[in-house]
Amino acid sequence: MSKRTLPRILQTPSVLLLLVWMLVPLSMTLYFSFIRYVLNSSIRPEWTTPALSNWRGLGNYKYVLDAKDFWFAIQNSVLIVSSILIITVVLGLGIAVLINRNFPGRGIVRVLLISPFFVMPAVNAVLWINMILDPVLGLQGLAVDGLNSLIDGLRDFPILGWFFNLWPVLEPISFRATQTSAYAVIMMVAWQWTPFAVLIFMTSLQSEDESQKEAATLDGASPWSQFINLTVPHLARPIAIVVMIQSIFHLSLYAEIEIVSRGNGNKNLPYLIGEFTSNNIGAASATGIFAVILANIIAIFLLRMVGKTLMD
Amino acid sequence: MATVSQTSKFSKIAWPIAAWVVALIFFFPIFWLVFTSFKTDADAVKPEFLFKFTPTLENYTNMTQNYNYWKFATNSVITSTFATLFALIVGVPAAYAMAFDPSRHTKDILMWMLSTKMLPAAAVLYPMTFLTKNMLGIFDTHFLVILVLCLINLPIVIWMLFTYFKEIPKEIIEAGKMDGVSTWGEIKDILIPLAWGGIASTALLTFIFCWNEAYWTVRLTTIDAATLSKLIEGNRAPEGLFFGRLSAVSTAAVAPIIILGWFCQKQLVQGLTFGAVK
Image (cartoon, rainbow over all chains, first blue to last red; front, side):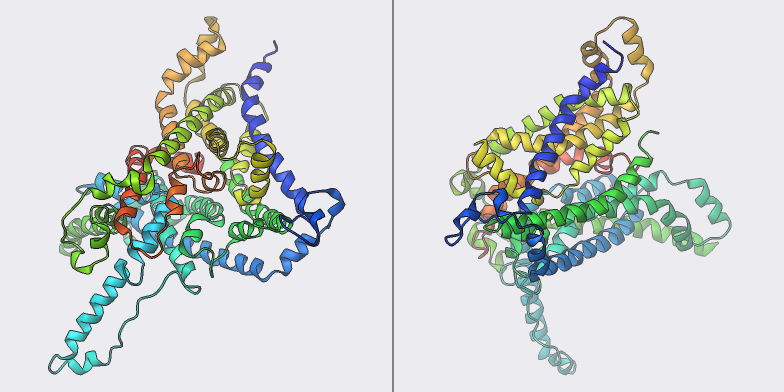
């Protein structure tokens, strides 16, 4: 047996499994994206079985590109993903700096902070949309009610009453509505993923060169300028990684969108694929190929970055 | 100088307080979920019982009858455990070979494995349904869920194990070879005991990912192999009449994982960033 045979044998099962997992379904998607294929059709029953004779060329792609929902889904994905990214990176940086020093109970603070990350997506969505954000029964509804009655009481107040009379009655926001459901998703996902950003930034902060900071302090640099000139450059790489990993995850959000509003006013490509899949497989597949292309653009950057550190 | 010591005195108190406040805010939704789970459904939606109420365990004792909780929980345990186990069985030898006998393709293979993880699942939704339902007839079986969970986590498993194994001095393995130990013996008697901590945390993290998976476990099951993700997604209770029982079943679904998660915070960074952040 040659020296190279054994390592190959040991790697074969993994490689084969992943190869099949990647190639078989994806090539089916690719095939379906070029044919007319629907699940139910009384007029054209021949379209209900996948066959080369139903060839449509780029027709499905054109159909998808002309669909209003497709552009809405792209636009909405950009809104959701970029909002979550901005919130998690900014909050993550702040919190990581905040807890990156010794204080009593630091271990417990870390444990409390990381917990949201382990909540399963379905529970996250159910918890936020019902118990917290519900306009009547959730904490939001109760808080708005409480504020209203507080203001109401103050209206009768002598002297200052006129000021409170200027205040309108507050209305709770329904986060299941078309205009707001995306914001509910942004909120709950940002809550879940900020801990992830904190954890990564904190790990990276711990490897920061302390002597550099001490020298800066001796030179009279303010804490803020130290943060901007030393810490942020040191964190550039972790920030890039947090951004890319989150982008890949959040481009395929599903459970949250489904639970909050069933896609009402709030779609992304995976959700659109799900909707097409109920009948128009050709369009679903073409959308799937677009989603793959989109994810690949981000993945290439991420893999380049990861690859650099791989062998050292 | 006086101002300096004043600032540091101030920050000595203010920083911990700020940190604690932030941590409590982030933990609050989880606290609220657990808190609500001890209220009856009727109490849970009444403002007068917001903080003062008679705690009850009825939501937990009725979990079986309201939601058939244990069936879904059992499915989650079975699928997550076996998927983790299979991923390790396939992944340990592969990572071992890559770490101790790297070829010039090893880097490319690892990168390619990672790239499979980045394919959007939705893109292959229909083919997966079609294959498993119409062609293989394994739709809604434990076997299918285990297989899929194993496959989507295999890249992370191999990657994490690879980074752990790389830390082990090659000489130890070489010494084993000189003594005429077989490959299986090397893995079993030298590698696994040495890398035990790394393997355990890889297993823990994989288990967590499997448990929380919410796309395939929902799309590829109906009843028989449905996991807790499916149970919760199916009982979203939009009218909010059942906050108490919904909170109880949600708490039961996430509590074990949150506690497991506390034990592998450190490994989480490595597992999720593929060793790119140290």
